Image (cartoon, rainbow, N blue to C red; front, side, top):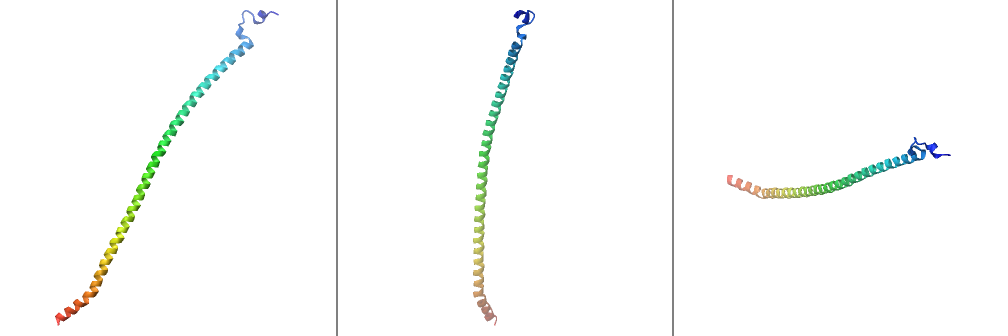
Length: 123
């Protein structure tokens, strides 16, 4: 059998089934390599974005933690100030009550004496 008659001079070598298969495999391999490179680039891009987000979120967490601590300190200081004011008010009320009690005691002691003196003077 003559191989030239099968392939023929008018039939190119690449049109044989095995040549076409090799060409298709080569194209498929090239397409897969391109898809791989595209996916790898996309993966790298997503990985970079993920890392940037993690850094950003970590910074936000640190900032919010600091703000929370500051607010807790303000609240604690406010509570201390309220307690100081309450204690100061208690002391002031106690002092005023003592003054009123002393005045009442003095009144009890001296009013009857003054009344007696007034009666004596008016007689």
